[in-house]
Amino acid sequence: MEILRSAMAGTLESSDAQVTVEPGEGGIELELSSSVMNQYGRQIKATVLETLERLEVKDARVTVVDKGALDCTLKARVECAVFRSCGKSAENIPWGGAVR
Amino acid sequence: MIPRPRPERFRLRRTMMFMNAQKPGLIKDAYIYGCDSIMLDLEDAVAENQKDAARFSLYHALKTVDYGSTEVIVRINGLDTPHWREDIRVCVAGGADGIRIAKCESAQDVKTVEAAVEAAEEEFDVERGRTLLMAALESPKGILNAYEICCASERMLGVAISGGDLRKCLQTSPQRDGVDMLAARGQVILAARAAGVQCFDTVFTNLDDQEGFEAEVLQNKAMGFDGKSLINPKQIRFVHQVFAPTQKEIAQAEKIIRAYREQSASGVGVFTVDGKMIDIAFIPGAERTLKLARACGLYEGDLV
Image 1 (tube, rainbow over the protein chains, first blue to last red):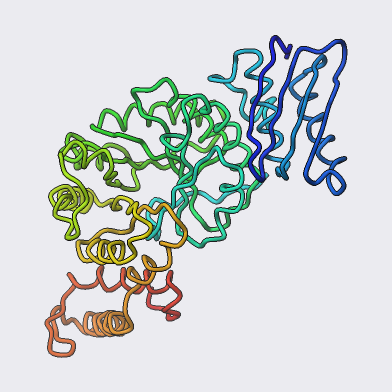
Image 2 (image 1 turned 120 degrees about the vertical axis):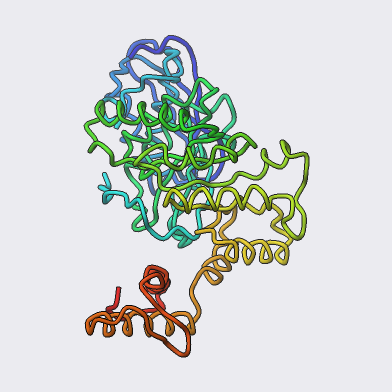
């Protein structure tokens, strides 16, 4: 998917993550901050990158402010932000396909 | 991915607790509270501009969190909104046990949802007929049409009263003795029992009024409800206590079933137990008591 405009999903509440995607300048640029950076930073980064790859996002600036979200929440927030940026978040989501 | 067993249309549902599907902190460990069913909410708890986010969150929760034996039902947005079709797609794709139809007013509403559920089961290769339905009755019209709603689909597990909107329509407010909802509750119980489905009372929203809550639960049980919708885990224990059969009821039910089996084996149809007349009409009630007792951890025998 192509990031057409900047979009955000998620909150700064505990167990959540706030994900912002913006059009990139060639490639994926990830900025991550987390309340559990030392323990889980690498895992969070991997989950975010995997999710972007599954959605075929190749060019984006992604900012994640993590507040201790589980993997399933991180995925949900990244996907929602990406679908929002393309104006496609409201219906016909490929559940079980690119979203899984 | 967590495979969930096929949902059971008739099972113990004393407590159904509402959870905002948009809040990861709530839905990730909702099963620890021990309620019989959780109700992940896509409707009123989720702000209009977060409906999309709530679905992504719901999908992954359904696929990732092991809810164990807790039933997982999702409340979808009303049929008068642009959201309900996608809500149904995500529920079916994620493998929710059931869907609660908000603001249901007619058998046609149930059939409309059923058709969309069937289409989604086809689309996502889910066993046809797996996803159960229940309806929330929130308007005088919904209450009056309760019976046709209860009978509208083989997937229907039951109906629930939703008191907030209903009281507004009825131009009343919560009363200590429950008289505000008496007619509606009576109608819904009659309809559900006539149709052979379950019925659930509305939430009690004043968390500071434990006395009022307990009075309402006792009245629900006395009227014949199967269970109650809840908004807070601290409400679960009392409902489970009230809806559990007493030791005396359990002993009596055992006695009735044993006596019935002995007597009918020797060709007797009607007889007495402790001075009370018993015949076949008492058996389903006695069996239900023992099943409920077993579910509550109070009966370990082998009669049911």
